[in-house]
Length: 177
Image (cartoon, rainbow, N blue to C red; front, side):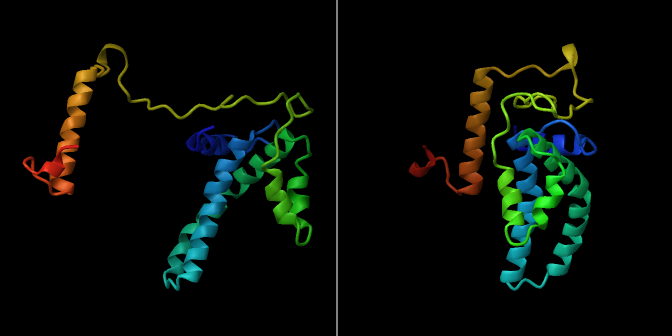
C-alpha cells in the first residue's frame, strides 16, 4: 500500500477497533508519525539547535492528532497476526524489552487464513484515495496529450533547465546531452 493511502486509511478507520490491518497499512504511518518526530528531536538535541521550542510546538499537536488513530491501527495490526488488541497496551509496559517487542510485532507476517477478526486483507482492500470532486469529467475534461506533444514539452523543459539552472547556452557543446 502506498504511503498516502496508508495514512488516509489510518485516519479513515480511526475509531475502528475491529478487523485487520496489513503490514504496509501499519508501517507507513508508524514511520511517518513516529520515526519523523524522533529523528527531528534527535537532530535538534544533537545539533545544538536552539529552535527546539518551535519543534515542540509542532510535534505536540501532531502527537495528539495521531495518538488515537495510531492506537486503533496497532490494534487492527495485532488482530492481523492473530493476537488480541489488549496486547498493544500490555507489551510496551514490560521493562526493557517491551517497546522493541511491540515494534517488532509490527513486522510479523499476518495470518493467511481467516481468524476471529475477519478474513486476511488484500493490498489496498477497502482503501481509496480521496477524489477531487471539482475535476472536469466527460466532454469537459482536458484532452490527452499525444506522444509528440509530450516529447516537445520535455525538450522545452530540458532546454530551460540547461539555460536557466546550469547557465549553458545553446552554442555550448556541454548543452547537448
